[in-house]
Image 1 (cartoon, rainbow, N blue to C red):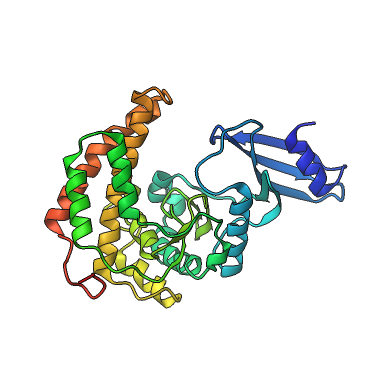
Image 2 (cartoon, helix red, strand yellow; image 1 turned 180 degrees about the horizontal axis):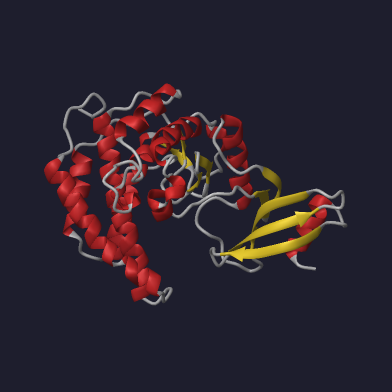
Length: 325
């Protein structure tokens, strides 16, 4: 009996059947399955199962048990997330939320035309809910750290010369805002990690990188140009800053200093640029030979160009109300 069948049997009883299963793309150390389960009482369930693969190397980020705790806390806080049906140390079984996650479809297909004007405000409300989650739901070791120092160290370890990234790091260090109150930060809240239907956001996915930090980190990351996929709209390619900020504040989020938000957006572009270098080096240095990883290399210069444009056209301010003296 496979692990999938064992888990389904334990949750729904020995008479449960799995008329449909399909393994979804994912990491080497974890498996993700779409399952249709027919319980012995005649009910049917559309589910997603995530489980650790036997012998798989641990992935970066939260364990599945920690991710379960985060998603349950998110549900309690009012964040749209899949409902946890059952969980263990090595698996999460959750409801399957229908909808689209591919950004280009969300931004271009007629099926989502009515959703697009609503998405930025819906993201603002979801982020306000995330930022009121209790810090106690975070796994141990997910405490606050200096994000600028972390990514400076990553760039140094790569041993690759990138003068634009060095310039951005210096500008960011010189104009750094005072941190906001510590909050649960999703860590990867962006277009691509949202399930969207014709009415808008149905679920927030991928909680592996959640940590304690400044709430504006999440808002700035959502505004990074890479997640606009060619759209001129700055928030995920589907909305304006006003749409996002107004909804966030009305939903109980802390007042947003726009200069500080611009700092975090600039930081996000730098961070994504360094990640692109990391991914490309995995291919070039033989860690994981992959055409996809190699192709990410061209994104490095795109981020360098974006950083130069941002620093020239919209320079980071000194002396905003949240900026250190």
